Image: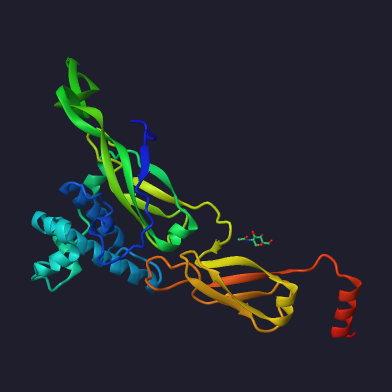
Length: 348
Ligand SMILES: *[C@@H]1O[C@H](CO)[C@@H](O)[C@H](O)[C@H]1NC(C)=O
């Protein structure tokens, strides 16, 4: 099956500040809201293995981030794997679940125990999964402005998705090569391989409309991916690939991003450069930032303003810094009178 037959439309691309009232369980498990139970289960399995404390290496900080993520994944799976809890969550969110008092009920062990329940305390069952064919991943560029990445943004994406559906008739499936031995004569044998198949219900490739909600979170960076498990290309007798949105950002005319920091160029007059100045500039989200220098600003001088850079992804309330590069606008010429006045001001 060929990848690339992807039809994407961005809908209702409204700018909305993300209010992270409760964590989105679907997002945590990287599945769409319409995901099937088995899809949720498989995505959980993949993520839980990836973020399991025994598997994560790196600095203490990276381990702590992974541990939080692991707890979130377990929490989300606990709710979404139970049909009645999932229904409550779909209608009333995390708060609804808390009110029903079902979350974490009778599980003092917290996040770990559901993992053990699932894996029987180990990482068994993975080999079986590795043999299952997996469809192609579908990658889609998601063009965002720097302002979108500053504020965060929720997008509805309408997709024409390829799916495999049952069709009339039977087909060969689960084919295996089998070694057979044939006796040709006394003491003479020939061994040969024969393909043996089972009969399965037929399938056909179909297309299906789908609306996905994509949360672009404040501080996300170009190249970063937002994944939807098994929303990619399907494959017969296997699991679909994943759908991955890749954040892209065309350069901004005024703001330049370097990691979590922002840089701007600001032109000031020669008089301001000598006497000092103060002015308000408008930030990406419209809030005012006061910049200025009390003394003399020389060519090449810059100003550093803490915490006025980009929001730091996944770190609520933390921001990078802002650097303002000053460019001094010199007059192109002076009259004789002005020259004399300057000489009088700065006698050499
Ligand atoms: C700021 O000025 C420098 C030097 O002229 C230039 O290379 C850079 O692109 C400018 N940045 C912005 C955001 O305009």
